[in-house]
Length: 276
Image (cartoon, rainbow, N blue to C red):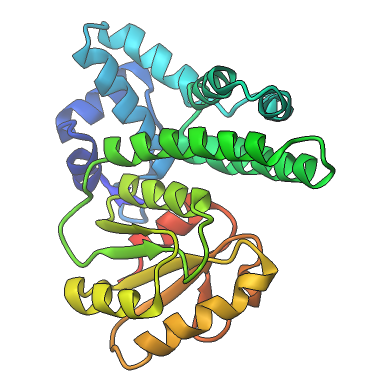
């Protein structure tokens, strides 16, 4: 949750305009502190950004508010299984179309948490059953990564301050969840540095000593990769004021001192955004 001043900074919409949009069009319904001050969550910020984008391209404020509110609604009955036949047919255009349609239905965080990750899990199950080829699974992964990379760039650079360092442990290349989190973190106002996959332990140390992050984030997508987090923790053990976080399906198996981030990118981004 952020104040109206921070919301204005993150969205580029002045405070007086935010108040006007709320009063005239019911664009968002911010929570209130005990002192009566407005606070905005990630979904509200996304709705405000959507309206600003529409107004900037020529929409009337009233029409933009209606459309922004529609887009903020949760995706209804998403066709998550559509990725499987598209992967089987090696149909990259159809995969891209499905992604575009889903991301148009709700906020980035909602689509990732409620549709994309479950859809990719089902795709993995289909691959394990032999229904989808390695080529099909890789095709979908690459299309998704390109879509996430675009969203990451579009989210901007975040605010000033100590960054969040994000990357996969040594010999691990599962990046979809990490890049989705990195995007959500930027959208929450965090400064991020995304290292990608296969980051050796000594490279983690070099990055940490160079940019002095407050948080370092990795992931544990497969059970067998738990041991790969240990050398990273060992390299960073003597660095003060650094917290190690881990996401992913099997984050509960991560060795100490890695802390689990949970399974929602929206909640994880919000957690780090409000942690000193």
